[in-house]
Length: 276
Image (cartoon, rainbow, N blue to C red; front, side):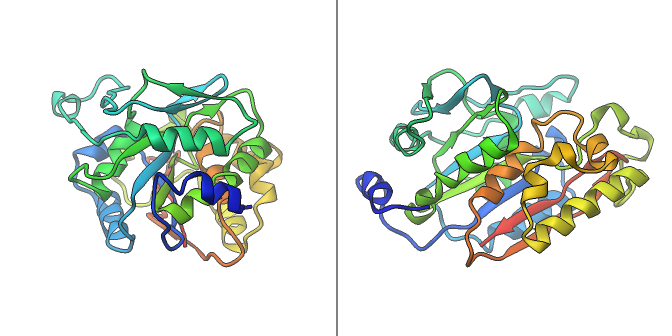
């Protein structure tokens, strides 16, 4: 719930705006940062529909921590948190500024949850590999909020709800992960086959999409209780939990739509969500 106190606390940082959308982006392979494909085209098409943000807060699958942290440096580094890819990918820099002011406001909004102001992390590939397609000029400040791996889906969903006030201050909140994400079962031989998924991945995608489009989020919050197909799709929670941050910010007047809604290499999905 957005309160007057929440809005007042960030009034000195950002001006009032119309309510910003919220996104979940299926980020897929780091190579999406430099390759041309239908998914990065989908991100660019999305960008044409977005109002210009004052800043971005990203919840990435790749910052999975004990406790909650938020990046608070002036200039976050571009983290190349992967291996075995071409040098061209390691050469990519995304020199967006940070926003210590937004980091402090985020910490205050999430009180009494203890949030550590972090000066060491930066922007991991869950953030920069997709944000660069939305804002290629790196002209929007970006901060990251970490995912506390000790907490439940319900906790993360409710924590996200506390960030609602930021939507009225021009902050674009992005969850970045993948709903179907089982790297051990990737079919590399069919990596380029369009919308290719194992039977269980097809079932998991349909199960999740049905709940998303129905606005029935509780089963998605309690994802560990869903069918075997979803358990195969979510063998570990870090790529799934950013979705709950996006869903936690949907209010009664928002509409939800899916894009890039395809399976990849048997055991991955690129399904992305726009709430507006």
